[in-house]
Image (cartoon, rainbow over all chains, first blue to last red; front, top):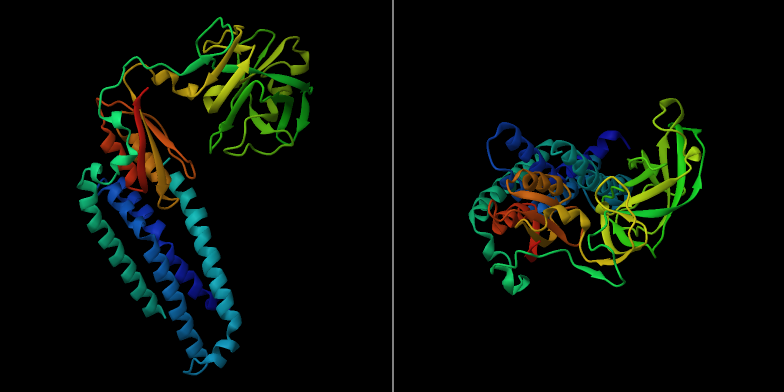
Length: 115
Length: 288
């Protein structure tokens, strides 16, 4: 198990947490440049469920490709069983990281930016 | 896999662009259509009595009808000036009794306690913790034991508490939701301490007293936030809106409110601002 195996979960978390990170980035951009409307930036957050779905889809698609690559072009039940550690660690990392970003890091960052 | 990531990122950007595109019409639309009319009281559109005063029920003979701002709490332990981790501090233990003050701290509590030593002016404590040393939890009952600390010793901010022959500690009612007060020792908004005898049941936050009787309105709303990030952003929008005098919009709060000047900003404008980061239902809009 290498660190780069965890990149799948990290990338999936980035996609999933776009639901709250993107509106924050856009709102800050609009506020600092004076171009655009903060209310419009916040509209992105209304599609939170879609972003979480996209993140999860990316995670499973990436894991599928990862296992296929490691198993020499196949991805059957045996291959999945062999790679259960990678799958479990990636899923756990994805859930923990996404929760931490959405409910921990981003609200603190938003508080600082819009103080 | 990098291509896959780029592909998903592209989808994310498309979804964001679509959200903003559809949001243009939402921003432009009046809010009247998005708030169920059944949630609004019938008298919302009609002019209200401009002489609305705080709801005050006096249950005993009273020498004053003004709402108290500070209520004295019982001091039951005073330490002398001691070395602590954060320097030399005086600690006082006080008891906020439910028989005197009932209420709950705000979701983000800002506990304010003041002391008066030998008839001096009210001074805010440097630190307020619950007894045992932990911070005050938002939404918890005000009733309980508190450890109040003030710098002392080398800073010589004031003399040690144990040398005060007449020490009084007060809690500021403006920093929590008061449900009732029953105290024989209250002091009014002036710094001088006065003693009155009154029993008062409050239904309003005394912090709002300064907004009463000048034509401002209080809009109560139920706010379901879309994401935690939206809270500070919406707060900034509302704070910067001209005509908004005060607000209480925070995560996990059952009922939020905004105090506004109806001559400057309309109810729909406020709802539109809050609606940007939340699903909002107007509950009540009354002149205070």
